[in-house]
Amino acid sequence: MPATLESIEAEIATLHETLESQGLNSRGVTDIFGRKFSLPVDDEHKAKKLGLTQIFCNFSNPHMRAFHTSWFGFFSSFFSTFAAAALIAYIGPDLNLTAEDKGNAGIAAVAGTIFFRLAMGYICDKVGARRGLGTLLLLVTPPIICFIIPGVIVNAGGFIAARCVIGWGLATFVACQTWCSQQFSKSVVGMANATAAGWGNLGGGVTNLTMPYIFLIMMSFANDEVDRAWRLCYIVPLVLHVVGAAAVFTARDLPDGNYKELEMSGAKQKGNGSLVFLIAACNINTIPLMICYATCFGVELTMNNKAVLYFYEYYDLSKSLAGVLGACFGLMNLFARSWGGLLSDWTMKKFGIRGRVWSLFVVQVFQGFMCLTLGLLTVNMPGPVRMERGQASKYPASVFESIYSVTPEVTFHCYGGDEGPPFCGDGEFCK
Image (tube, rainbow, N blue to C red; front, top):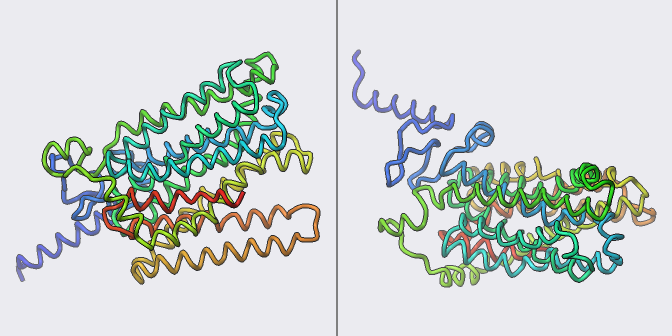
């Protein structure tokens, strides 16, 4: 029996679905300028497939280039912000820092980002997340250079001020999340936001893990002079910032192109950043997300600032071993955030937006339970149980990703305004 036109079309549609499930743009969809996408896209040209193959083997514009450059830019800012915490055992004696100075520097490093995260939401809606992220990476490089040059930062005041300015770079997180939300469809945006944020936050663990060893390498170049060696270590975050910014500027603002070319072609109107930010900020749904994020991120920031010094001074461990143990908390981001994103996307498919909200609630309750358990188990002990801390650390990371998955749903097309207010609650009060 000869095949009918309808059956042939059905078979072709099935074939396209099969190929698209493998991450191939079999339909040959292009942007408005005729450039073919490498990934299958939805009606808004947002990528609707994000698997391990795409994450590890695809760096093409626009979707995967935005994904990789956004997480790397955020990673660079996290690495530079907490490099001082990893090197504080060497920096402290050289700059005659007191315990109060070290604490104030840690607070300054994260307090300054509150305003910049709010501002970044406006910037993302006005000029695009790409330009906001790349520009901020370059904006915070002067204090990094000041750390490298001998004689520029020589006391506690300069140290605290430099850490504050470098900490502004943590606002790249808002750009990272906004950009991924603009590039990936609802079916995979949870996974995209979760993995990009998780790999970015991984910078806190990596800097604790690697900086003590980088210091040992720099000692050989500094003729074993500690005051020169720790300054030379800042060459690494400086390079990360410059390379990250350069990579960001090679990507595209939106799937169809950059803001400027879309506005010139008439495909996009110039955004009113103030109006968009006001609409998003007035949305009551941002308030619980901000509270959830503040409580979770406060735990992470405190650990990244205090863990290495804590293990070094409290347990009298070597600086290198203290760095390894301090890194364990941050390294949880390698898998825990992606796990949360997968959970959120799965519940979204099954139950809609209510599924995302419930997954956030359940994981956050588990986090609170583990924190309470940690306190009850160690209340009569001289020091915390390290394994229990490791277990508890999985839950803040998983809660983050649930928040990242819900945020794009708060106000449609107000991505920058929505990402800014929730993520400006950086848990400063937890310090």
